[in-house]
Structure formats: C-alpha cells, structure tokens
Image 1 (cartoon, rainbow, N blue to C red):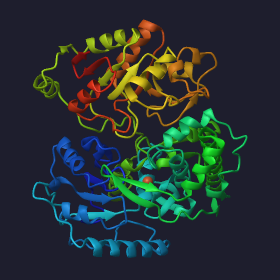
Image 2 (tube, helix red, strand yellow):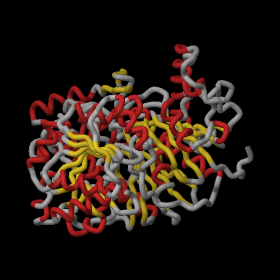
Image 3 (cartoon, rainbow, N blue to C red):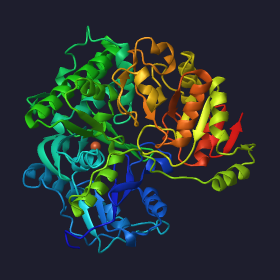
Length: 580
Ligand SMILES: [Fe+2]
C-alpha cells in the first residue's frame, strides 16, 4: 500500500491490561469495546477475540475490508500474530517515530521479548478459536503512549495547534509524554520512562490502602477528601517522582513490579507498597490518600503549566489512566491555564485501541478534519426481539412498553425512590456508565447513596455517586460548569444546591457530572427531563450497571444476572420492564 493511499477502515487491537478492539471508519470510531465486557472478567488481559469479532460484525464487514491494522504496542504480540495470521510479518515496528531517541528502552524491550519468545516458543490456536486472516495487510506497531496521545488528539476537535499530554502507570517503558498536535500530526516534545510515573505512584498508594493497582485508584481519590495532610504532608515524597520545569528531576526506581494473573487479568505488586502500608496503618488510610492526591495534583498542575508556558498553546488534550483522576482534571480546568481542555473519556488502557486506529487513519489521510467527540456509544446493541427471547427462555415476567412511555414510567418510579436498572441502546465505551448501562436513583435524598452502596453495589460507604444532569441545567448547579458529557471532570456544586442533590455531592462539595443533551442520547435525556418535570430537579444519580469487582454489564443476560443478584427493584431492558 502506498503511503498516500486513502484508507477507510482501520482496526486497532490492544492486547494487555484491559484488552480491547476498536474500528475507525472515515476518521470516526464506529465500534470500540473492551474484552472484559464480553468475558465479564474485569480488566481481562488476554487477546480480545470477542471484541475483534464484534467490531467487524457491527460494521457489517470482514477482515478483507480492513485497510490497516494498528497495535498500540512496540512489543511483538505472538498471540495476536497467530490470531491474525501475521507470523511472517517482520517484527520491527513500523509507524513509530522515536526509535533512535529511545534506543535504550527499545534494546531492553527487545531482550525481554526475545526471552519471552524463547520461553513460549509457539502459540497455537485451539480449533474453536476463529482466525482472522490479516496476512498481506499493512500492520503498524505504535508506542503505547502515542496511542494514548492519538486517542485524545484525534477526538479533541482541535484543528488548531494543540498540546497533547499523556500520563499513566507505564506502557512500552514510558509513563509520561508531551506532544504537539498540528495539522493532524503528533510530534513528541518529551518522553519520560517508568521512573517518572505518577500513575505508578498513585497505584502504589492504592495497593497499600488495600485495593488493586490500575483498578482501585478511584477509591483512593474518593477517600482522599475524608482525610487531611496535617500529619502526612511529605510522608510520600520518597516514592513520588518530582518534576521541575517540565522535566523529571527526582525519579523513583520502581523496579519491575511482581506480576500475576487473576481471572485472566494482569495484576501488579510494587514493593514500595509495603512501606506505604505501614504509613497508612500509622497515620490512617484517609490521610495517606489525601496526601497522595495532593502530590498528584501538585505535580500534574505544575507539569502542564510549564508545557503551556513553554509552547504558548491554548488548548490541551489529555489521556492515559492518570487523567481518569477527575479531581486533578478539575484543578487543571479551574486554573484556567488553557482556553480549552479535552480529556479522552476512555483514558485508561482500553482506550488505546481507539487511539491506535485513529492514528492509523490520520497517518494515511493527512489533513483530514479532526472532529470533537460527542459520544462513546460504541458497544453492542441488542434489539427488542433479542431481549425478549432471553426473557422468554428464562420464563421471566415482564411488560412491554411503547418507546415514548419508557421515560415516563421510569421517571415516575425514580421519583418514588425506586432503584432502577437502565439497559438501553449501544453500550458505552470506557469506565463510566453514560446512560446505556446504568443503575439510577433519586439524588435528592442523602440516604440513597448508602442504600445503593449497601444493597446494589456492595461497596465502601465513602464512595461517591455521580449525577447525570440536563446540559442546560448544569450551569445552575455547578460552578464554572462546562459541557461535560463523559464524567471525566469534577466541578464544585454551587452553594445551596448540595441540598438539592446530596446523594451525588461528595463530602468535599464536588460532583462529577455527566451533562446530557438530546442529540447525544434522546431516551436518557427524555428520562432526566421527565424526572425534572415531576420533582423540579433535572438530575439523576447514575452509577454503572455492575456489581462490585465486575465489569459493566454488556448483554441482556448479564443485566438479568445483576438485577437478580442485587437490590435493583425495576429494570428497563429495551422496551421491557421487569419488577421484583
Ligand atoms: Fe496506558
């Protein structure tokens, strides 16, 4: 294939923590899903074979129609090569710009990969696993962080020059990168190795507090406002990488974390977590969490500010797991350093397949316009016929409603204090439920938070819930509110309004809203509007449709299991209503 040749379909396949697959058509993500949703095993880390099958099927295409395949990793991925029949492809990655610059870690990677290959020798597919023949197609390997950068840049809508920043635990030996996006091209300004990882820092603290690295960081963030840093200030400095003038000046040698698999998901242990655990026992978990959050915000804010000043760029796009920290994002936004701030909603590793596919598309279609992402409903859709079949087989009692009745009925139940399961349309990509696979409740009563934590989510009482709010009402409820359709940034709840929505206002007076407009999700918009008409509060408590420790439900079968295994009282599955 010649470089200038236009491509239509680009497939991105991520194999690793949160394995996923994404399909880009004409510059837009049209399908993207993490394998965990199909396996219902959180952070599933084996090859995303079901996600791959889904992406092709949902677009009505086969592998033959795919123009380009992009892997968001520079490592050789034997399992994928076998799955895609690519064994004869040269392994040297193409499409990456940093080889010479980052020679040392490429050599390291090469050695590690060689050892891995020697040990593994051969990967062979069981006969029941379908092969997707991509032999003869162009295949690119790109750096993990380039894929994170691409995910936010090519969905930012920034057609003017923009700053792009990524930060995560680590990927392909890097943890933090800075880029300039201009005319559809990403040029690197800075690449920092694992020793500068703010994600590993926050993950280590998370592990020390008793949770899972690359999973429980949201809990650390949720716990932080319950503590203070009076006695813990400075206590975590020893593992917090420190940046000055946009450069890493105090690295931390994490060593290679211990790795193991649990339910087919990668898990890590950082030895530094043992020491942090001792500190947590001495000073209290919440005070250690507060200090970790303070340090993260301090480092991140100073870092982005430096690169803003250095480049003079007014817009920034961010991605990587660290930017799932909505409080840190809030600090950046409210500092008003940038005129525009865009965080890719699927900022963790499940989002790198989308980034890889977008990178491939823009590489082959230089100058193509970059459009702002408006929704992430990229997952499976189940028709009423499919849903009804599942209900009938299980001999469940249900009622069928016309579409226009669904928001009315659901709003009525919610206003009466019921817990409602809401399974509608295409599943959302990323860690947040955005009104497709959601559990909903009335946000006006403070006790609803405890009810839902205790009877549905089975999780820690301190964990906050988030509001979905009509876009036009967000300005009334939140300080300096902007459109925030993806729950990736928090805002201060306006004085006096916390009394209206206590179940979704965190202890520090913030909330992480999803603003909803009619175009993005008409049915969900209709529901919130109807609830607002009945109660005067156009806001719902929205939490993901899952049980603690499990991924968000994907299929009607998953939803039914969750419904009967929890205290959810009503469930709206497509046009069907079930009650207990
Ligand atoms: Fe990552």
